[in-house]
Image (tube, rainbow, N blue to C red; front, side):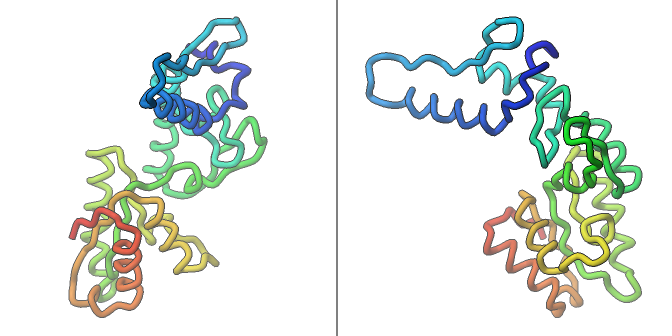
Length: 201
């Protein structure tokens, strides 16, 4: 399987997906002749369908670099990225193709945004953080938390919140009296509603 990708890293996953989508649209057209399924050839001359390549375990278990978008063998091992993220939430990972260190939070995109108010002396965090870690352990879906790598020193607070919500599919809302009266929490909630996110209160 690795031979299919070696030397073909310039073909990005999104390019393959665009080819497949265009083929499916042509397939649903009124033409009598069935359009040829898109395919690629590896360096050995073997022909592989785009659908087959996108379905391969190797591709599913790797994450492309957010800068060069390289496919295996230059992409990042998903399990190693998750392990490093679970351990410290911060740090960098080295891209062999770019030859630079990439912040881990750029590589992994949290699917869940945790919207909550810290509470009196951080009392809410003692509930929210363990619960989010449990969700991650049970689902393999990462949670965006401002306290755990969601925001760094010098970041634009509203921009980071807006970006975290935009990239997430689900927004977990931890309601409290302090949450309802907090301008930051109101901002997060309105962003989730405006962007049509799936909200779980």
